[in-house]
Image (cartoon, rainbow, N blue to C red):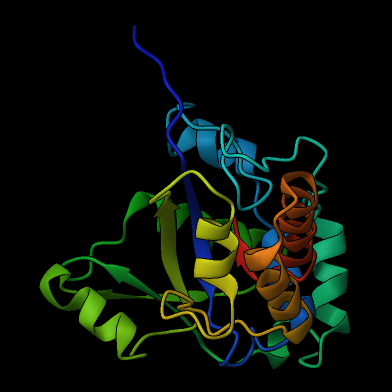
Amino acid sequence: LLTGVNLCTQYMIFDTTQPPFDDANVRKAFSMAFNREKYIDVVLGGYDLPANGLYPPGLPGFNVALKGLPYDPAQARQLLAESKYGGPDGLPPIVFTDMGIGSYVNADVAAMAEMWEQDLGVTITVENLEPNYYYDQIYAENHGQLLRGGWCADYPDPENFADVLFHTGSSQNNGGYSNPELDALLEAARVEQDVNKRIAMYQQAEQMIVDDAAALF
C-alpha cells in the first residue's frame, strides 16, 4: 500500500452572478446541507479527506484551526428561509452543469443532489455537456448555477489557490465571486515579504472565503 499527499482540493462552484447563489445565505445553506463524511464514505469509498477549506494538507498555510461550515441541516434550512428567496419554494430552477454524455448522472453529482433534496427540499436539474466542449462552454459562461471544480497546486503556495481561484480579476474564478475586502487582502499578501505575516494573511483570506461560502469544498 502506497499513500501520499497531493496538493489538490476538490470543490463545487456556486455561480455567484446568477440567482440564487448571489445570496450568501443560499450558498451557506447548500454548504451546510452537504454531509462530507457520508459523501466520502459512500461515493468515494472512504479514500479522501474532508475539505473544510481551500488549502490542502501539506500546503504552506494549511490551517488545522480553520472553522469550516459544518453539516447542519436545521441551520441550513433556517439560512435558506432567511435568504431573500424566503425558502425552497422561492428559488429559481437550479441547474448543475456537468461533464457527461446523454442523460447519465455521475454518482457524485447524484449524491449531492439527493442530499439537497432531502435536507433543503430543493430539486436540482443536471445538464450534461459533452467532454470535448465542456471547458469551452464553462469559460464562455454558458452553464448553470452549479458546476464542479478542483485545483492542484502549480507551485506549493497559498497564493496559487486563494488568488488564482477567488480574486475578482482571475480568469480561473469560474463562479464570478467578488469580494473587495478579500481582493485588498490578497493584493497586499502578494507583496508582503515577512513570511509569517504573509502566511497569516492567506489564512485570513481562506477563512473569509469559507465564511462567505464562496464555494463548497
